[in-house]
Picture (cartoon, rainbow, N blue to C red):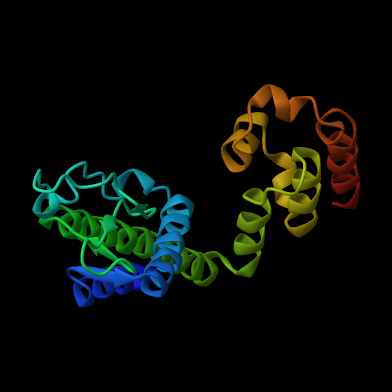
Length: 199
């Protein structure tokens, strides 16, 4: 996940003072990828927020024009005074530090995802594949609470005996929402009675 961050840093280090239009377009594509990745991982607040991105360029003789370029990673630049087709860019040390922090946060997110996957594999070993199937149903976003309860009980009939606090813990819904489902109000009790008749 951190590869685009490294690409962005390497690209800026390879162009410490100036970039052509084409190079800026390339950097913009990399920066956009990092930005979207940070949003997806929930760490967009760690993207560099450096107001002093061009300290070496500040000059009154002659006065500099306004910033002509700014990326999603807050790297900015101005037209070169001697080479009009080139942007003079300046990445302050703080920019590199912030990018390093962003990379660390993304690695942490990767680590959490890997740990969750290991947890699922451990759950499968300890409790069987049915436990993983139930977990996947419980955390799916495209099924109603009623549907989830029916599918889970279809995998493991013992879940019929769960009370509303148990279902609330598994599905992450309120006990009131659990008790309002047709499954809870009507079909669950019929299924329990049918199970008892088979004993």
